[in-house]
Figure 1 (spheres, rainbow, N blue to C red):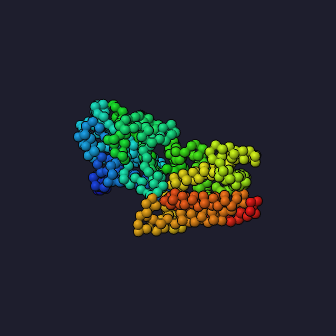
Figure 2 (cartoon, rainbow, N blue to C red):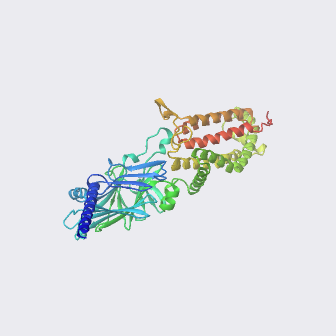
Figure 3 (cartoon, rainbow, N blue to C red):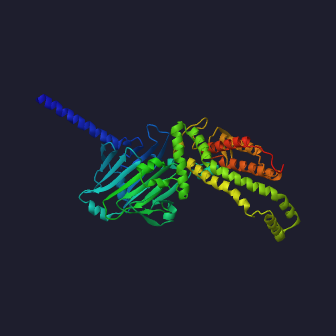
Length: 515
């Protein structure tokens, strides 16, 4: 029995020794890593700061894209700072920590406990990392018998920011407006730029139910104080990729919630309530609902087709079918306008040759009166544009912000969220870039072909010629506009133009009354 007890004691000692060696190896040599299906976080050897943060979408197991909010070469994404004593703050950043890690079905909790900064003062940092979402709860706590005095005698702040890898890439043309970084805050269901919240060197209060942080086209890094208000410092002295939260005085514990993940409706709506306002924020409420309608339809078609590119094609067809009754009415009104315009145009041209100024206007008005036609009859033709423009804008915003298209291949297109980039050119074209994008050429070719075959029996020959000229000009303008747009968006519009061509070719070419 004594031999067994002796052996058992030796084994326990070895286990304790190995455990201690592992802990100090993690804290002194290799950074501690915590990984879930959504997030990867690495902590610094000293200071217990999160020095690397990577998010996976839709998950690590089936990731189609990922975003590095920060890397080890960048400042830590969140840092606790003693703001009134630089030397003491340096000592704080050099403290070593012991690590306690707990895990359950919902989250991973990592507790860092520091060595003493002063005789009776040490620190705890607790990170609660959700397994099912992109939320991280962070607690900074001043501990020890002298913690109350220490908290009252110093000022503290939180520094937070993103790394260089979070900065959007620069793109030529109009697509450059999509790839931009914004500093934002959420207040009472609204999303605003931070320059409205705090201009120049001013400070303002961020309340406990508000979020502030950074977002790019597809990802957001936001922080929210829990149980207290903070002063958000925004000014010339802050770096473009950082912001500071001045913490309340005489308090020894500070809790924050961080969202570091995709701007995805289902993720935000179900797991980060309140943050769904990040989606389509700049649109009127009815336009937002139209975008959401197209988004839900696209997601349904993706599940149905099993292919994102085919789903976009089906989406374009579905929108055409949905709009068909309204388009029929618009076309009927357009034909009425064209017939009246063709009937009046020869007389108007004659009046313009013979008369000028006020007399010309008077005779044109008399002409409308003689034919019992309102001078405002052409406004009826605007109905077609009025019903198509909202769908165009909604499709533009939905497809440009849809992270579901990020990193998805289709045919020769490597990424539907970027231009299709068939070939790289040996030179740079101003505004158009250095890649040959095939889809805009296909889209424009179909549009030019549609314009070439366009016929309208309600138009006179001169008006038809003018109409075709306008269509050619529009085709060129749309080519320039769409050339650097994401391939998913150009695919949607190319499909739309293709069915317009089919419709033009099948149109009944009845002999017009002016032929």
